[in-house]
Amino acid sequence: MSGPVPPWPPVPVLGVPTAEDLKRYDVEPSALRSTFERFLTREPREPRAPLDEATRRRLRRWGVAGLAFLLLAGTVQALESAVFPGTPIEESGRYARSCTQGWDPLALTYACTDDGSGADAVLGEDTPSFSSTRPSGPPETPETPETPETPGPSEPSVPDVMPETPGPDPGPASDADCRPAPAVPRVRPVDPRVTRAVNRQWRRIERWLKANAPTSRRTLGRPARARTIAVAEAQMGLRFPDSLRASLLRHDGTVFVEGVWRFGFQGDTNLSVREIRDTWRMLCRVDSDDGVEGDLSDPRSEWWDGRMIPISASGSGDHLVVDSMKGDVGHTDHEGNMSFTVGGIAVRSYYALLKATADALETGGSIGHMRPRAVGGQLEWEVAESSPAADPDASGSS
Image (cartoon, rainbow, N blue to C red; front, side, top):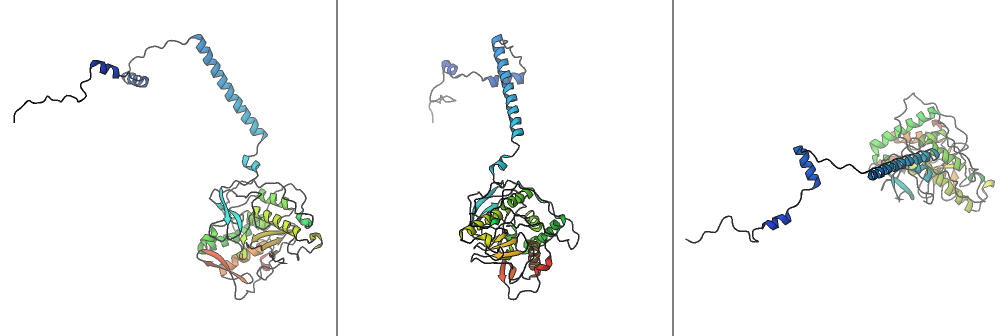
């Protein structure tokens, strides 16, 4: 096969660029590239012309103005910190625990889901809460621990920002205990012997829950702060027994965990400091609406009296309460009855109830006619076939 041989390389389809084309598309190197190339080649840089006097004056003025602005901002910040030392969370009147608020279908109340941040959660003033209240009365005689023990592990600190605003007026018909006089919150120390005794019982409960009902153990609240309890006491006009305060300082009630019944005595759910106060206010309002003159009624026979401290709620209107004057534990129900028995037996104090619960968990016994058991990793209470002879009265009166 013969014929002309095409040139190589072949001629571009669009033609060969001319000198003018190359000049038009030639781009000057950028200032950054030029600087970088000079740095690599160490090529001496052309000296820059000095700034004129007017430009130097403007630069000096701008520098002085910027420095003055920074000094002014720092002074204002320091002055604000000195005049307003409180944290924004405290001024807002709400707890700072990071949580997810949701409806607890088991306890029939709004609750806060713990996300592990370590702070206390509080619902707003307008949030319904069917919780229990705090016990009042003079400080009780602490129980001496049975055996010397070292205190439990230190508890994490949590911010206290429970609002100190007075609650709604319960009404003229309610008893005088529901109308406390304004008071300044005062933090009262808890007897160290009571704290050790209460912590010992909680450690027994926690061990049993970890081994048999780990899902229920997740509902135990984080520690409350002493000032939070003091605020609740001032707003309710009551004094919580030492054993109740020591218990709240270890577990501030319980927290909402979806699909899990919150831990509590006798199948109830234990209440936090905020829930105790809100439940106390709610029960006082209901008491003012029932038409009974509370000042003329027997505080231990009527279905409710403001000197009682609700500590747990059943979710159907029943509550376990502590008499702030006598210290024993009672039960008030939604049918208008109050009795000072738990499971059919007398319970002398909050500490006695706590210890009886630990005993029942470890031995498989019961408290009156109620017996705890583990079902599917959760704690449940059932009616016992026979009540034990043991009486929680023997557990002390802390």
